[in-house]
Length: 245
Image 1 (cartoon, rainbow, N blue to C red):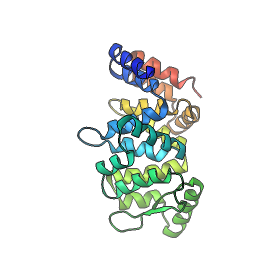
Image 2 (cartoon, one colour):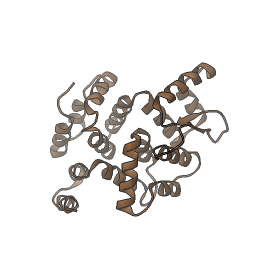
Image 3 (cartoon, one colour):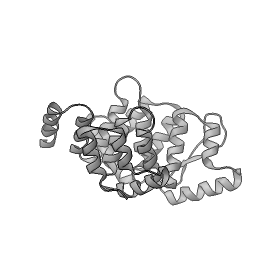
Image 4 (cartoon, helix red, strand yellow):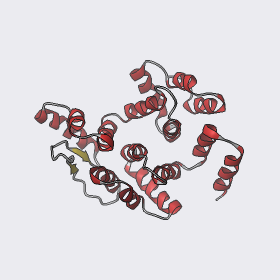
């Protein structure tokens, strides 16, 4: 379509991180997220972090749109590609996140145990309110938080996936604030993470994420962007982020 032609023209005129940001803004949101998922799986090595972030934090409707766009744009099923690209308990949790978004999916939670057979139980459920209650009950029985159980009984990408589900259930805005901080902390900038999270939340809840960011890190999101980026790229990010809370 016309937007794809325009996107190609922009790609030829721009370069680097600024190009990446502008191209991200050209895509309809669900098509952009389908592209991010596709890019995370193509070539050598899978960027599990990107897949986990998108699948755990999007609503049922958003996931349905992403799956549809993925199939239209890449001619294959997102669920099948994830199954081909991941394995074990990580694959199970990612597939559960997709299946829960399906119309008519059964409403009882999926129980996932970690490979050690211990009961680090993370539930992938269509009802977030149910999950919060489950976490509270778990803490009463186990005498420790669900997060501590996950950390002690899993590691790597599986741990990241399980903790992300918990974080998104507890406080979605805190989760995105944490992702944005992670993108800029330390040496170098994780530009893909920074761009994806600002672009995808800019028309949804970025103002709430900015407030949470300031509360959690004692500085504003825009001040961290100013210290971490430069040029047109910096200016474009700042205009998306808007005024400080």
